[in-house]
Length: 309
Image 1 (cartoon, helix red, strand yellow):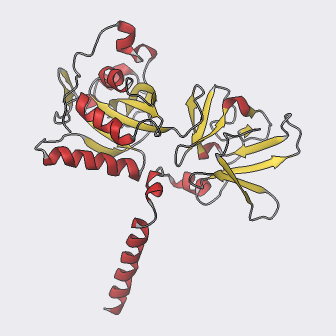
Image 2 (cartoon, helix red, strand yellow):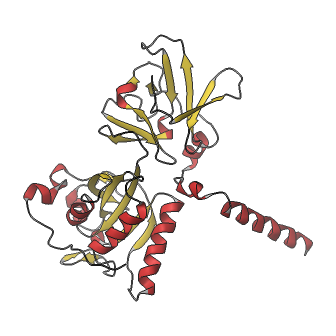
Image 3 (spheres, rainbow, N blue to C red):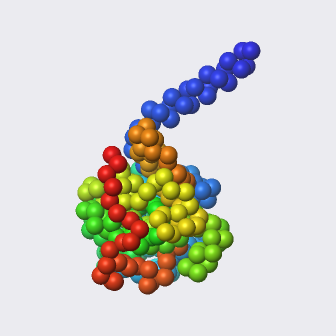
């Protein structure tokens, strides 16, 4: 009995510690085993294995854990070391800490403390004489350079992605909306494959937004008012699991906010069909699906605004 009591007490204390760890911690992304090894346990990915080592596209590198903008593509250079290298940072985005080895200087995200890599001076690679050596797994990349600030991402599915894209693009603070596929088991699916309903994927949109201008709650609230969240595996005339209503959360903060909004609608009597699911890999749809209604000059046939909150 004493053993059971002690075990129970440990569990209770752990729960209490988690609840009092601060709201900002809830913004952290869920990390897989290797990401945890590098980002939280200060590990290192093997040289030349990172997906961003040789990337030359224009854009912004953001923290995998919290979404803060860290580095610009303009400051990236080839150091031939096997890891992405930058000779500058977004002002105030990176914090320096003496490494445990007593020799190197560790760099972490100034917002959430995620381990990024190390910084080196005096190597002469560029005129700035500075090299931020970064693990690819510690960052995400957003194409096209964005203004200074912390950018976050939302993944949402509500029927045909054309209509969802059309309405969410018009929200102030939304930087981009990309149509694509997520939630299934087939890698790099085509539109024709997704239309069969056999891939498990939903037509979805990836929303990149500035949380200082628009909140995640505002985005999800709008999403739940521009499609019918009570329809199961369909949206208007579009029928099939690929047209299901779903919110793919990236962290506990997003899960809690989305869950709260869905509960509000349930309390109002809505029979909610919207799935609340942990985000998985997102595959960008073919080019002709992007900005569909703006390019065509028409408005959505299966989406419209209905006030629900």
